[in-house]
Length: 226
Image (cartoon, rainbow, N blue to C red):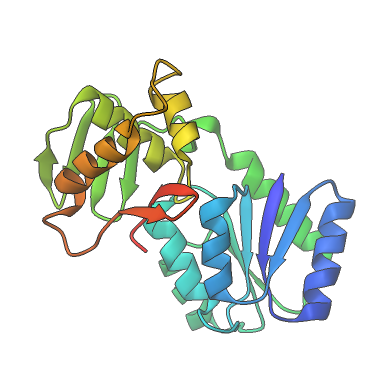
């Protein structure tokens, strides 16, 4: 299980990761919210640990941003702020748990394991309805809505959109797209991927202020309101 930690206290961050790794987790540590959000676009994690008072983008805003495109990955807030109003703010932004510093590492481990036990496949990649900002992708009915209006897609456009949506904000390469959407029955010398990305942009993004389909130059594409 992979955990991403947002904590700007270097000593606490190192101690937490060491403890988690001793309990068979992998733990990556990030010290500011801006870098944290870039990191989750490119790597997959099973749980996020967020301090609130961190540089650039605070942990509560990071939590809210994650929830705009990923409703399911568990989020635990770890903070020195212990007032009820602080906790209410965190849960309003759809955090799953809140632990006040200082805390015992064993208690954090109990809470992590409890959240991971609740996470089922149907809540992750196999979910039938995916929501990202005001975009709704209904896999069962093969229908797509944005801003409350249905958008007509071809089968390949729909399959491409589903693949991008299921990546939950992570960047996917052209090769990964060809393998999953075209299943290798594909001439890699053509610009078909770019053509279909442009088709989707015209239908999904053109008439909306917030753009969801993004290009990460040299790496691929990702779907996110950022």
